[in-house]
Image 1 (cartoon, rainbow, N blue to C red):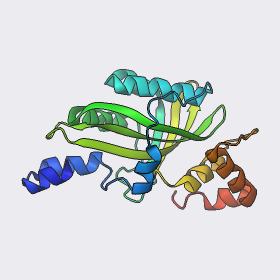
Image 2: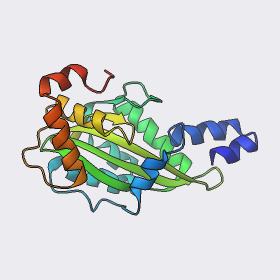
Image 3: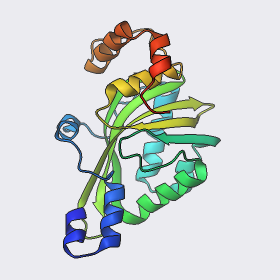
Length: 212
C-alpha cells in the first residue's frame, strides 16, 4: 500500500500507510514464522491470556469503547522498537491510536499468536495485526511483540518490541516479576529456559532490554 501511494504522490496516504505498517516491511523471518497460525486459539486460561483474547475479539469487532475499557486508567505503554513510533502513552493516546487504525484499515484481525512466557500477572506475547488499507485496499501486516502487566482484569502496563526480539521480551518479562515455574518442550519454552539459565535475575534487572 505504501508503494502505491508514494507512486501516485499521495504523501498523506503514504505517511499513514508507513505508520500502520510499522515504518518498514516485516522481516522475512517474522513473516515466515507467522505461517498459517491465526486467531486466538493458541491462548490459554491464565488471566493475561484471557484478557488478551477478549481484547482481540473486541478489536476485530472494531469495538473501540469495548477495547479501551480493558485498559486501566493509569495504563502506560512504552514503544521499545527500533523505530519507536510512540512516546510513553496513556489511555487517551492509545484510544486515538486505535481509532486511527480503525479509520484507516478494513477487516483488521489478530494473527500469529505465540505466547513466549506467561504467569498470572505478566505475559510476553507476539502476534500480528493483519488487514487491508482503506487507501486502495492493499494488505497490511504489523508483526509485533509485547510484554504486559495485567491486574484486576485490566492491562496496567505494556511494552512493545520488535517481533523477533525474543531475548528483549523475555528479559522484560523477568524484569517485571514474571515467573515460569514449569516449562514444557515447546520452542519458546526451551528458549526461555536457556535464557533464564544464562541470565541471573539481577543481571536482567540491570540490563533489561536496553531501553527505559
